[in-house]
Length: 87
Image (cartoon, rainbow, N blue to C red; front, side, top):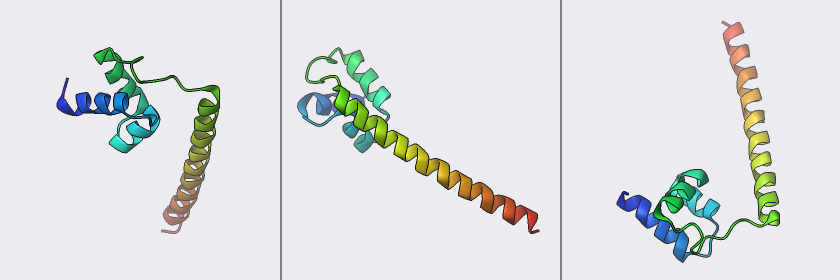
């Protein structure tokens, strides 16, 4: 395991911050970070599963991000159509 991965797992195990937040700060996906934790065998050592309330908050946040991304894509598509038809 690379030094970066090992340090990331150590950070999760020594921090009270959620895995999601640490993954975002490190620029990796939550699934990737959890896989590293599992590989090291420390998944239950300092990493608590998300509560239903935390899962709901994350779901709502992700939903809002997806809505914003969809809106941006709609605007880009409209702009692109306008630009290509105008030529």
